[in-house]
Figure 1: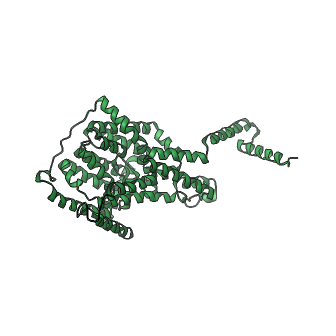
Figure 2: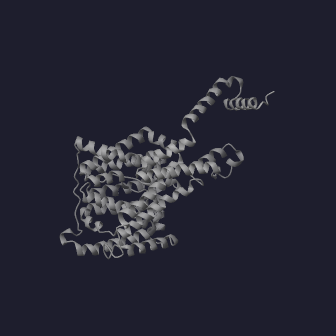
Figure 3: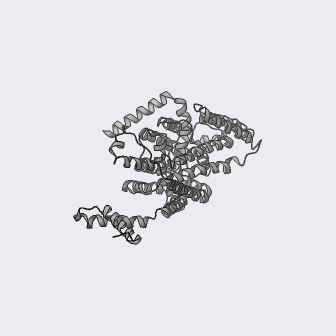
Length: 474
């Protein structure tokens, strides 16, 4: 019953939010297209996925997550798998194998509770570093793969530096007037430009048209599964775990504190189900992502209604148009798409500003300490953030920056995570902490018969040792 009551409350929130601001929700649902479109188009052109199946199953996943979680939780490509599949022209079977392998491992970690344990032991500065690094990676990728190739009047009248500057100036205005549906307007303009260019550059039989979806199942051979799992799936695991599950859980709590925060177990099972169903039909391996969540929030999405709308739109396109969209999407202007990606990256990187002022672990520490003080704990149920010392601020900042540096230098979340953990252990060695913890427990047990707590006993012994060394012991 509590589950049904929670679902009912989330659907009421979805309905009320969409009824109150439908344009913002629709615009926000399109905020993640800057990440989705380039990879989905490239995978389709290399015949690594089925576009129809991808639209159908990612649309169903959008609807499912919008109903279940009630937040604008994105469904986006698994980037590491996509990059390898595009570079090596994977077949649909090999690409599906990579997604199935990754989803199976994530499902195992979720069911056994290892994913939840992993989340508890990761310091918040490292999570923030992964988020900021992912945001800056989006900005860098937009510049290198989309915007740097533009000229003042090229490569076409609809895709050049002039339109890029116009899109950027419009983005700045939308920051001042946040009710403007930036993503929606830019998407419509881009599709109009793409349609006009396709009328000139393509033959009639290549233009978009109605094509009913004909689902076909895939059964990878053992060799195909081995290639997909080892060459692409292994590299995707740290990215999915850190950025698509852990970082998403933390970011949703930061952006939408009034709504229930999805647990890492629920997010992990969501990723598992999406891929263990869709990949067998040639759908693109998908996951959630902190960048997509930040992008959809940036462009107006505040509830699950936004991605439910997007899910129905994908579902209709996949069922009745499908592969006919390839030419139209292929011509989408990079000048417009690149600015949308930059906006999403900046929005994600902004979460780093709360590292030392309102980060999740600071609120938890403050709540724990206030519970020991009757006067403070009776403050009408309000939480307060603990104010870290100057030394702690510098340590937290250094750990976050080291994580960002490792991620950006090697374009790999796992390297950033390892660099951040090593930096954190430099300030807080795990062996020393474990040693002192065991020593305190030993004092607690061995001196409990005296009626003295182990902590007090240990503190008094240290004080006596200090007095002896200073020559003040009588």
